[in-house]
Figure 1 (cartoon, rainbow over the protein chains, first blue to last red):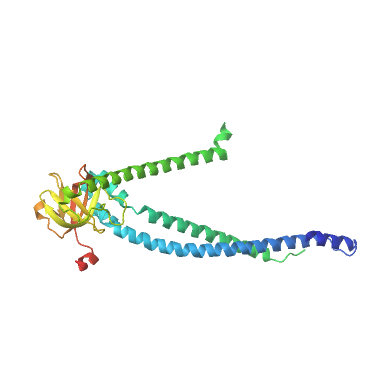
Figure 2: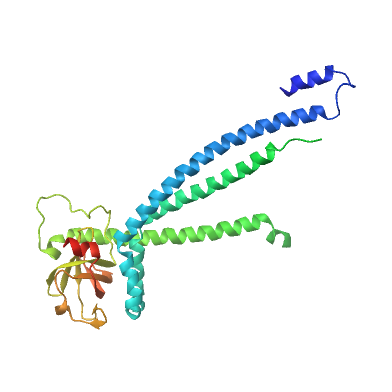
Length: 139
Length: 155
């Protein structure tokens, strides 16, 4: 495409071609291409952020249910009601807590939240880039 | 030499070592906890008939609800049987656990220390303790807690 423009501009003769026209045209074409690429990026990451948002919501409710089923809250309450006994048997208490942490649902929640945050960052970056490309080239 | 300690490579190596240390620690903790749970579950299953004196119908393997293994170092659940020093509690997953009350076990209801004879069937308890070789939990602390609202209504 840029070669065709180059040939066209070369055939016009020196007087007819304003200075810097070729580079303006080439840069316009490349920015159009970049904009098209950014739009594709934006679509993909918007979709990804939407999916990960839904996944984060679902995994949050799952983690909440798993935490309440695990009885962790009851063990943590012992810290307030029987602090001295808990300190005396800190090893058993710590193991009781660690054994009950619903690791799988915490991992799923962290992973989906991470994907959501990263895809949101990519979306905001793409939007910023598209806006900066949309500004007209003025010479 | 001074340049090396301020270089990007040095920072990357330092952070990689720190990350490796944390990961190794977490991995080791997972192994220890996993081994404890697996051992306890195995002993619990082997001693089921002795501890609970209640042979299950059928000869199939004993399952732990929807879990792979049982928690070894504590128990939470409703007292379903009191047999001398042995307390049987049923957890939220309907899996029974045998709690062994020892002479030094602290038993509490609200602010008061109570004796094992004061425990009643149907009470909700939280226990911290250590697993023994018979698939029981040797209690250090047994605390009687108010039953959860949903459970109280359903009982």
